[in-house]
Length: 106
View 1 (tube, rainbow, N blue to C red):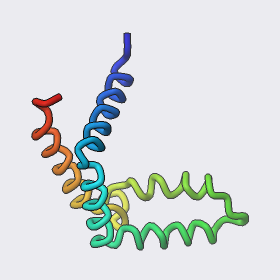
View 2 (cartoon, rainbow, N blue to C red; view 1 turned 120 degrees about the horizontal axis):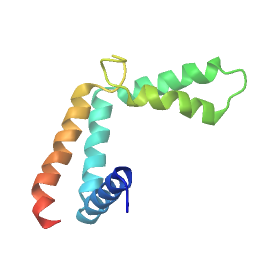
View 3 (tube, rainbow, N blue to C red; view 1 turned 30 degrees about the horizontal axis):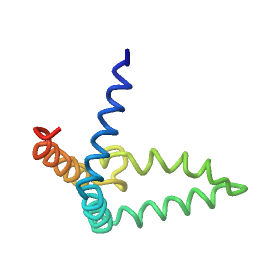
View 4 (tube, rainbow, N blue to C red; view 1 turned 90 degrees about the vertical axis):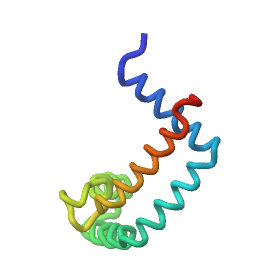
């Protein structure tokens, strides 16, 4: 018997497979890249990475990635200079739309 975590992971895997199979995954990635570039999120993340790398005595990539992950994934309310809520909301809406269009086929 699988627990809730496993079934959630299974659903995410099925969703990912469906997104890839329909070509929607690549479309969403392209749209996300555009939104991130328009919001200058990538430029801000790069600048933060450079600041964090310079602050390290000896550059250690796993430490840098571990520090940047939460920064990159945070909402605008937590770090106004990071991912705008509008980008997160736009992508969530696109995924919900995909689910609405494909749910009855699953």
